[in-house]
View 1 (tube, rainbow, N blue to C red):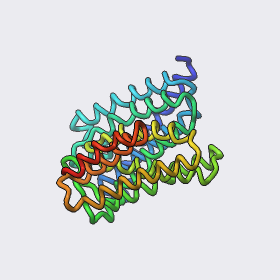
View 2: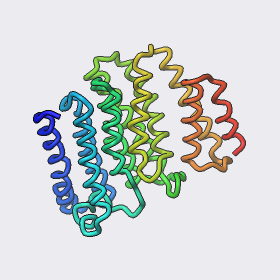
View 3: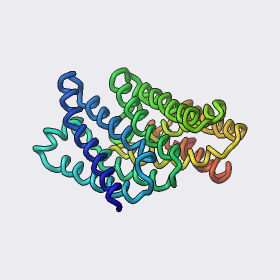
View 4: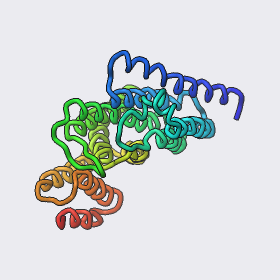
Length: 288
């Protein structure tokens, strides 16, 4: 590690943890609820992490930053006085969540695997930061149609908001920064919006902070080299599987999260292997 890299790590840490009391103060003044406070931190941290390709040149400083950021977050969770103070912006909700502990390692893993390709890092982290917050806040504010997810529930309104925001988080960087053809960027955005929404819908206890960025990275890396006809096929497969499970949700004994998991499993089997490998996933869905 060079002195310049240590300085960058220190500056990013100062921004991340210096922002916690500021956000807490703003949220208290605004009378915001615990979910809004938590997601405000989520967005702020995510946007800072999204620009890592323009700050760091290699993965080592990012892994060190992730370790240095995760340890204090664990302390905030474990020490009651800190958890009730500054940590209230992260732990103000009653449901158990490990999202803040998984956040930094997931970002570091995506940065490592992107090998200096800014869009392969920027887009997955932006989906995690903005789309996840948009879905949670929309579900809290306007959510009426619920579906089961692990030990809790999520809302269709929140999932729709997540999918729309994820589409924009993919489409805009591809066109504005990457110079992609808008039509190709649109199909990539539609596919990733649907798949990321399914992943978020089945994740529980904050594990979406792990599943969304890593899954988005692998899907994006596979979609970018494809031409438009192949992208259209993938969109039809993903949307068709989603329509299948939604149409049968009324008589299925599976929860909403499990149904979305069936869709994701079917997509992965059909696209990454062979369409015949999707048959067991469809069989599980039909039998339940």
